[in-house]
Length: 289
View (cartoon, rainbow, N blue to C red):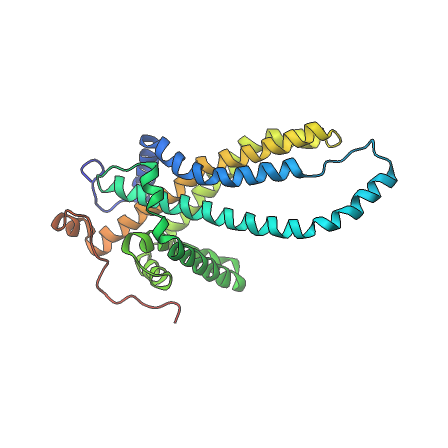
């Protein structure tokens, strides 16, 4: 806390602190995000390795026999899909929770490690899954009406995960807590999301486009096609772990800024140096009732 100071921040200051914290602890955040996502990278590379590549040297009859034989792989494909969903969810939850815990420790003037941050997520996996699921359903439900309501709800729920992890709230309570905290602040949340997606798009173009060109240039060369597709997966992995921490760091700092503005969190923390400060005592309006 002595290094950064808890006080109301403008959007520019939130972004500046985000980039500053990310730059100073780059290895920490890359490790927290990258280690879980190595599972996804391994799964994707395995899929590329097992994928059937076009072989122009095969006669039509052999190709027909091969097509008939693929029906027996349907069950394996379904199992693989389920495994992929589980792996993706675990990687997403660990990287998300670990990053938010790390930001909280650093932002309050403490120290942490990659392992310590990821270990803290173990006991919160079920709750974190519930928060993410309910958050996604709320945003999709609003988006069914129109795109703009969906974006608005996403902006109002941007701090639900920090609220769940740092205040030990359940899924419904964390969404209601975020909706209360972000009142009159949806515009700032939207700009944070906008900058994140711009960074993600630019980074993905930088890391994936060159290998995507190779896929288009060598569509009938099985060896080059497989290599190019594997490199596309590596590029996607690098883009994801480089940009992913930005949104989570900014979201955590935004969460603390809202608590300082609306609940004098900085004064509460000064009176309780242990850092365990309860959430605001005012009644949380229910948006899900």
